[in-house]
Length: 294
Image 1 (cartoon, helix red, strand yellow):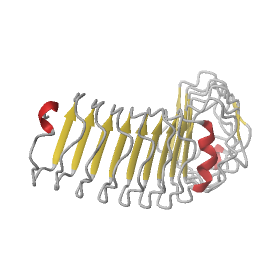
Image 2 (spheres, helix red, strand yellow):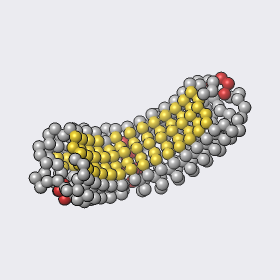
Image 3 (cartoon, one colour):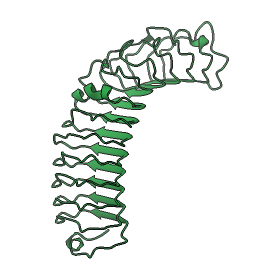
Image 4 (cartoon, one colour):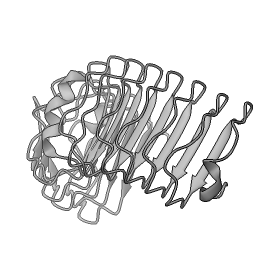
């Protein structure tokens, strides 16, 4: 940790690899560090300029209110930005694999990052459109503008999707792409055929305050299904037909009956029912003999 008043006068350290700077309100700029690989900056409200560090691989920026843009870091692989309201424009970092942005109030536009694999956006109402990302694998969205969901079909290689905090969203009809995994939370009242891909392998449904019914018959490729904290979910409207299902978890839901066809799930290994106090009975036809954990 270096004091703010002296850091701008420091000489260039040719072998400097890691630097952490915190609570430096008078810091305006940083010197060049040609070998710097990791940089962590926190609460530097006066910071306006960053140098182009050719070896930088990891950058964390928090509460830097004066920072408006970043240079192009050619080697950067991980970038975290929190509470930077004026930072609205990012370069298309060619090697970036992981990007986390949180609590940035300004209107933000993200470019197409060619190598990006993981993107997490938390409480950024100014971001309305997601970039088209060919290498994309995992996306987390929390408390963002509801319009951002309209750009989800552009993510053709997405493998995991976690969504919650979209209070105005009433349907997931935008999700027509073949997503192997989806986790979601909102005020949706129904999840049924046509809203989620039949190619889903992992489905997490949590904290749907008004979800009353769940149709499962079209999710024929599921391997893991987890449903939790849905205070109005009392039934499954269709038979569960996914013969590939290995894990079924239901927590804190007022369901009265388990899904129909449960005994036909010959791949099912784990069945977990937790705090479902309204459950009246198990299926009359019994449970699959493949279950190893109950």
